[in-house]
Image 1: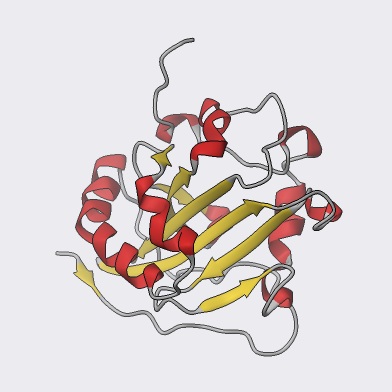
Image 2: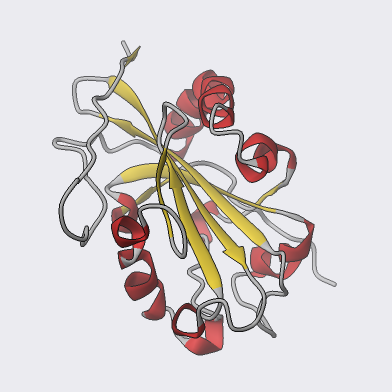
Length: 196
């Protein structure tokens, strides 16, 4: 039986963070199991992130969802994640992009973790927002934010607690300039798109 429990919020107070906090003993879920858990907690996630009063956190679940089921993301602390994008991210769902995302494009990735013994933990909401040219050329002008499951901001590049989320830039640089620093939903979890 799965139990939704509160996870203590881990916040690094000194120095820069180098990676996401990860879950000890994560469960290995099938897509159907991950989807069933997500359906049970998705409302709790929306309510928790909305406490931040960040407009993207309040609205992301109304956007296009690019993942058919939550999938395990080693780069996000071995959490199960689902990908969403606002109206300016249409090309993202194809698994590649022809051009860099336009200013105002926002991608959101909500997260949860499940332990081997069935405990379910709400995870952070990860946001990428394309800012005006010149915002942060090293990051291809993406602003990264992380909102904790209690609605508090963990950090935002170019804003409060910038040093806590600078590692997002380094990680996303590995995706390459040709991909606008974007990683895409794995094929097995990508929502099928009809050919154009």
